[in-house]
Amino acid sequence: MALLHNSDSIDNFVFFQYTLGNSIHEDLLDKYISSTDIKNNKTRKELRVDQYDNINGALFLVVHKERNEIDAMSSCVKYNEHGILSAKVWHRLHIKNNVPTTVLDVYFEEATYKWCHDNNVQRLWVVFNESTPRIAHWAAGRMGERRNANRPNKFSDHYGHAIRTGWRPYDKLIYERNTWQYVIYYSPDPQFFLTREEKPLNIETTKIFKREFPNATRNWNELQRDNKVSEE
Image (cartoon, rainbow, N blue to C red; front, side, top):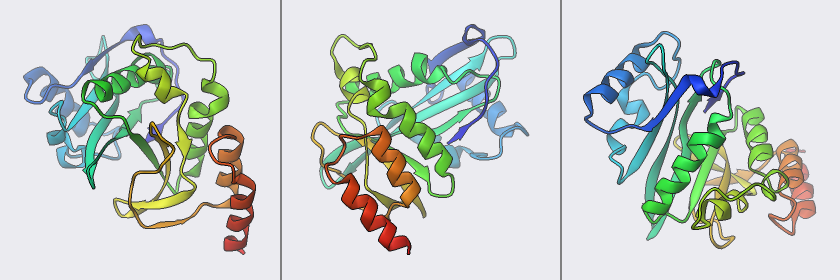
């Protein structure tokens, strides 16, 4: 996940879902991968392109109208583990510095929630590398209870609103794809649904999660104390 400062108007971009095999979309993707501006996800395999068949996953693109280049992307990938269906969202999220981060609200968020709804996915999760805690902290502020409590419902079926107001952080780091990750997840019930190797959160992140998600667990103070002990 890469987030940079923004400067351009949202009106300078078009938004659409990538279609696997569409020659125009493939050309855009090849141009994006070959760009010297891109440091990560330099191959189709790293981007997991073959999964974006609209059944196992989806890739959402933001393209500059004049340059006809991908300037932002986000994807979601479906998981089925132990009979539990979920989706890793904001996967491969990248927003170039000329794209306003409001694209998350006006496109990526709506498109992701609608895709999950259409594919009967009711459990969502997003991860952030332990090595980049500032991004996890930024996301907590964006996805937390305080910001989302009074945001308007964008879907008549109430699905998007339920997710938007129901995100919660997991109180452990999980080992996912060969690295330790912070997790923020949504489930219709509060139960965490992934089975991974775990370790305690650090003190700073515990404090931020407590501030942004005060009702996510009744044990924040106890958890904060335990994590402090584990760091000593």
